[in-house]
Image (cartoon, rainbow, N blue to C red; front, side, top):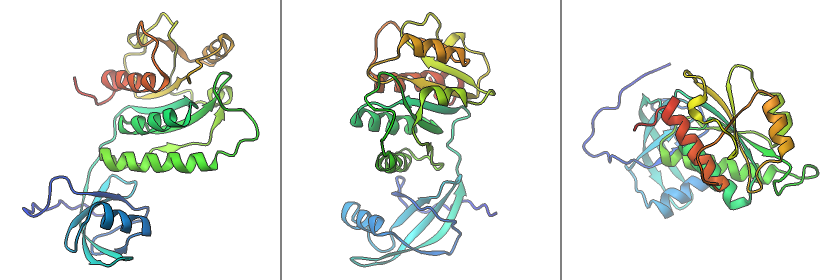
Length: 258
């Protein structure tokens, strides 16, 4: 494995456009961009030959490349340097997010990735607007995965969080690892995040959909070892609750600065 430091270059912009390429990369490698990336570079960013791109590939290395050839259908780049860059939080978060409406779910996934979540499992619960049987989630998963990559591209994360296939909420709770702090956020709980163990670096958390949880679900989930936690006196929308919950956890156990 190689490790190089990018030399200072007065011609390089501070905010270099970023692309995700799912390939093993190395210095001096020449690479042809995909049709989608070619369109994005040409029509959206309007870049030219000799312009610099930052490439990330699901490792903690970022690669710097220059455009060496550009036409209507083809863009060729050459990697000239790389450096190690770890932007991951010390707090590992596996989010069990009960599936909400399309726009809210998309928003939740986008913001969760920006805030450092590592794994997202969409969950099916009693009050969510998804039936438990006969649904093909393949199209939804592809869309969610695109949202994840775009979020990493924007927030400068280099490791791509995982979107797991949707599961029944009880199955997910039952199969969770024992070596983690397990939380369900519920507005009627009497406990807060301050009641969690002082040293926490691995969290499994559940956030409900618009319909919340039934009493039976709360009872069973806590039986699986999940702490019931409240975020405050107000009832939050599902997409707001997820953002607030991750923020609170990252401030207390992760890398958010206050």
